[in-house]
View (spheres, protein in one colour):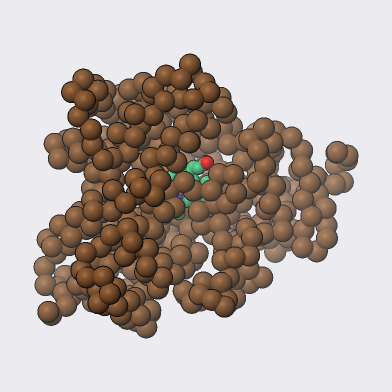
Length: 455
Ligand code: HEM
């Protein structure tokens, strides 16, 4: 590689930042919008002691998503999660151990495993909405956050937590969550009260899980949940082929929960907000439910949920409009080059933090026709706009694409099937803006009136 400075991406000097990377004046969206207008698909922003190079759009994205971890590494940019996930897992271990732990995630979410989780998704959703009245006003984000915590407790953390320890564990997880603030990205060990609380909660969670795991191992009792998959898992080519320790299992459960919980509840919320605001799409999805009931009966299963194409497209479109992860990041361990759509070539040097933005990329008119419009049919044949490589990156892409994507679709479809079959919705506020103040980006508050359908 010729690393002449002239071949490096343009640098946007002198930007005022407050605190960490995620707090620029004017907000992250403005930064991307202005940077893209000024410099195009590839530009560098110096932030504190680091250089962050943004890659925007499919032309400059393939290396970012495809390259191996020896070139585009995750641990240097995501290691702020270590105090939350814990020692010995994910970003606190060498690459070959992490690869095996990700294999364990994948094996806990195979088709057969997912089939066994579906009845739990349904049961939780049905019980939750049975408690709603004939009519009422709710905020989807609050409701789905509670419901998905219950479902995650049952399917990921296990029966013991869901049935006996739910309130205690939910409080501890909340403490972990509160300990992840924008400052934590750069200074995960800063001596601030929310970090102290995070560390106490992490310790208490480890004690609770150690007890549960020991009890299952000693009694030989097995359950259908991700916890059981981790208890049964063994390393293959590292760590002498041993089983996971109690501490590692706790760390992996927390990591899966952090990856899947807010992302799923936020996507469930936007799906509802957009369907409620676009009645024709709500009605089409409700009709699809009636077709499914006519064909297969009332029971929701892996197979019937997989048949729901209209609902699937609504979820995908909600995720396109508002992906909950603003930035996905890597650390360049080796220099690499990109060529933009206008034929400019740049060399990104070793040591740069490199970032792609699902939010911003999804709004590019060269990727999605009329991108600001809510239009789930863009994903139906013959348009199938999602098929352009690296255009739709709501679940990431390539080497580190989301492992929980199918789990997420099934869970969200189960929730919306119950709702579409039983309720009508009316937005009492305009479609809300996204709240860029939080770490995982969801809708600002929005009141929705539900009315139970008359049978
Ligand atoms: C990775 C989004 C649900 C587990 C990712 C990535 C994205 C993403 C964008 C790529 C991150 C990167 O490239 O750095 C989402 C969204 C979800 C969702 C929008 C819900 C709508 C879930 C669920 C689980 C999960 C439910 C687990 C049950 C994971 C894991 C990874 C991941 C383990 C890491 C994969 C790797 O680095 O190789 N997710 N996710 N996600 N997701 Fe999801």
